[in-house]
Length: 124
Image 1 (cartoon, helix red, strand yellow):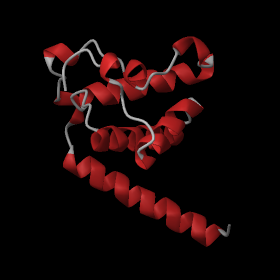
Image 2 (tube, helix red, strand yellow; image 1 turned 180 degrees about the vertical axis):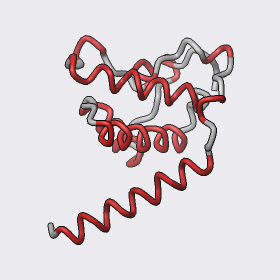
Image 3 (tube, one colour; image 1 turned 120 degrees about the vertical axis):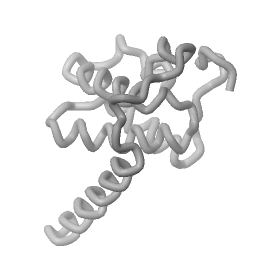
Image 4 (tube, helix red, strand yellow; image 1 turned 120 degrees about the horizontal axis):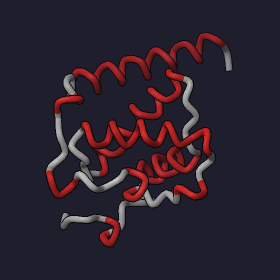
């Protein structure tokens, strides 16, 4: 892969992130609904924390904060947006994220995985 193609991919991702940020400019002021506050992103994604390397746990905490700042959505498209943005932020800040997060992202994009009903603490 040439440097120009890497640069064009990076530029495309940067514009997508800017678009995401412009639609949800003030993420920090959005609070999750009361019944959703206890839901952790890793529970929703069916990630077992005991299998996550210590160096990756900070990124999961950051992703969980982003998830709750967006209102803890269960909509697949919104989850995909949040994970895309969160992974990019982790990469930008030098945080390692668990491979399972990227796996879940790609599974959701392909329609191979969705959060199961029993994992949701509230009805859809």
